[in-house]
Image (cartoon, rainbow, N blue to C red; front, side):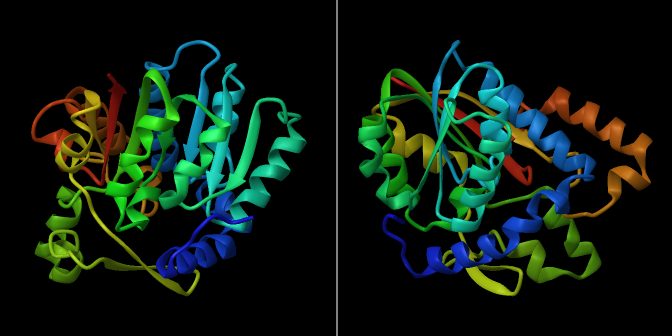
Amino acid sequence: MKIGANKNEEFAEAAFTTQSVIFDDLYANNTIVHYKRERVRNHVMQYLNPDSYILELNSGTGEDAIFFAARGHRVHATDISTGMQQELKRKVTEKDLQDSISNELCSYTMLPQLQNQGPFDHIFSNFAGLNCTNELDKVLDSFNDLLKPGGKVTLVILPKFCLWEFLLIFKGKFRTAFRRLFSGNGSKAHIEGTYFKCWYYNPSFIVNRLKDRFKLLSIEGLCTIVPPSYIEGFAEKHPLTYRILRDKENKLKYLWPWKYIGDYYIISLQKK
């Protein structure tokens, strides 16, 4: 049963369900996508205790859930897309991970209904799934009751400014260059011909919303110097340049301003 979806979520669900059967193939050979996943996973792993119980939001086809389960953790993988959940369940069965990964269809804004599944050691959301809601405040407010004392949160979010997108102004692509900065009512996105909206959030929004009950652990920029993965074939066509940019990004990822101006940022906080 799908828990509470508004209209925009319904459109997003339809788009990602349509894409679900080809999702893994689309990105299987994308070097920068692999780089992003490695960065995010390394970030999360530094905060996970052995045998952690993870609540994953927008779990997609289950690539991250399987990664964490293979390292001894349990994952309750949630998503609003029926197609993504079906792909996840297929993989879980195929890899015999039923004891380590459970799943549930659930809207972000109805997370309090997951309290019977918890409490959790860690809440994790990868690759901007949370940018598909304009009610991030409501999502963040639900975290405290879902986590154990000292529990942690890691979110991967699209900020309101991306250096790589802004540089498109020099190519005359003004709409793309400014779409994040002027997206108060949501910016149009589309997947497989279905349109939905997304919103952009700076780290300060999350920190300020959670400051009474959570302390900030770290923020790092992702695809600040390395190009975003939608610049197709960059790493494959320019391997040396890609390695130089990757190494530079890894040195600067925690520093101002680089941690704030990437395609994404990774933010972790801990319940007080």
